[in-house]
Amino acid sequence: MAEWFVGPIMDKIINTCSNYLEEQVGWQTGIKKELERLQENHPKIQAVVFAANQTLISDQNPAFNKWIWQLRDAIDEADDVLDEFEYMKHKEQLTKNMEETEKRKFMSFLFESPRKILKIGERVLKRDPNLKRLEEAVQKLDKVSADVTNFLYLLDIAKQEQKELEIDLYKTRETGYLPKNDLIGRRKEKELVMEWLRSPSNKPRETDLYRNISLLSIVGYGGMGKTTLLQHVYNDEITQEFDLKMWVCVSNDFNVKKVIADMLECLKKKRPRLETLVALQGKLKEVMSKKFLLVLDDIWEEDEEKDKSKWEDVLAPLASGGFGSKILVTTRTDSVALMFARVITKKVEIVKLEGLDEVECLQLLNSHAFAGVENPNNHESLRIIARDIVKKLLRSPLAAKVIGGVLNSLDFDEMRWREVLESNLLGQNSINSILRLSYIVLPNHLQNCFAFCCMFRQNRKFDKDDLVRMWIALGFIQSSQGMIIEDIGGSYFDVLVKKALFNKVGYGYKVGYYYKMHDLIHELASNFFAQVCGKLVVDEESSLKISETIRHLSIPTCPDILKKIEKLKHLHSLFLFYEESNQIFAVHLFKYSKHQDACAYYTYILVNWK
Image (cartoon, rainbow, N blue to C red; front, side):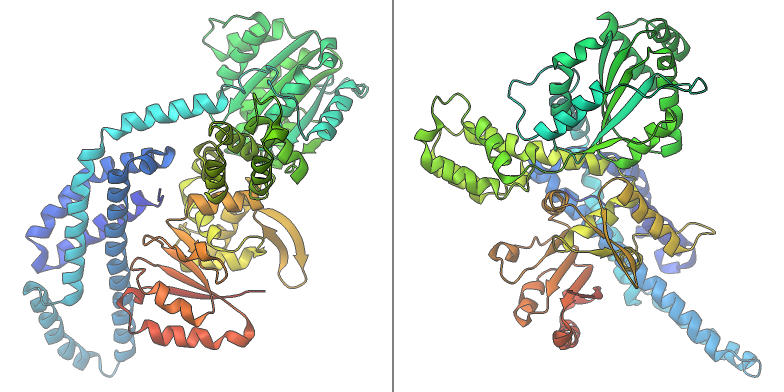
């Protein structure tokens, strides 16, 4: 599914064209009706596109997916024409400024007047090619937009699908129940958490509000097994020494009153019938004088200061907890761990979860793939296929579980197992939903920036300033009054780092820090955004299958590649990865593109391969 700034771009098209209406005599008729219809359909379009972004509905409905791309094509076409208008406007102004001197002001006026009259005359007669193109683009957009009413019914379906998806995703996280399978591959991390639970708390200072409480954060990407790890810890006999135990799944829909009510329900086995925050806080404080263990699972971050204030409201009743009380937090980002440490004024303690090693990942996959099988060794050919599959799962425990479950449902048919091996393993909905959740919680202005980064090769080191300049060149940065656009772009990147979508990996003498996208994030994101951003790799046959909807493409400097890109009529940017010895390829490409209509609006950016 393609996500883009449908709201801002349509606003720009409608407003700019409306301004032309006031200026251009030739536009006083038919085009006005199209713009009025666009204005009317605009909210409906935004609602439908937003619903599609939140769910997998476009992947499951070919007609809707086709309409979405027709809409985007029409919007992009109109936007391109408006960009050209803007360019011509600046060019005319520059020419005018150069021509106008004090000595020739009067003569210039006499000369310009007939030209202006002629220009208006051309527009009245609709001979102006630029206006004609814009009129056709608006009419095309109007025609596509009119079909939005056919898809309004999908809004309710999308909401229901999203609700069911979230229920499936979180139903095993809402309690600290013990999973059916043994813990595989997290023995070391479990022992670290257990040791922390056993360790005596530091002697409290009387001035500390949360003097009796210790905090430990479990940090890792989605699907790394944070919840599973703590479910095993929560059910270990060591936790019996706590007088009170609470498990709360927070997720990305954080609500202060709901979290407190969930805590009370854990303690009382009954949902409290209290509505106000003060009443809930008071009720919780009444029962929190004893030593407790609290697990807060799956905490996200939206706005650090606002979140800090909300968590202060949640944790305030816990200040009266008994000496030795412990709070365990799971999150995807270090910033959440830091925020919690600030709330209860404790030092930051973190256990990081990375991917499993290949042996552990295979063991986990086999435990699901051969579930119910008395002797898996009797299926040696399938075990060999399983070993090959694991090599493609990027050490993800979630992927091992999901793919293992898929294999188990295939009746141990070797041919069908091989089909799984040759398929897009990380494209499974259950896995993709993890990335989708990471993506849809991003602010709109960051979504295109993140998607764009997927066109670069895996393990690429990103320089922050270089990446920001690319975003600026492609129009991804929303200008803000009084702020330098490079600073705005830099703040965009900082948020992506904070959300753990990029990791700081090293330091360069001239450029400062380098950043990388985690292999799992890169692979999942590349699959997720394949219709928008892609890359051609000479030695990979699969890379030749580039979607016709592609907007941003990276290619190596290989002469054979030119014929493959000439059919990409919606391409907006082309990135050339080159070595110094092959820079001449860029010159040939620019000459070639002059003869290709599809290449007329490319943004070219040369990027050194090294």
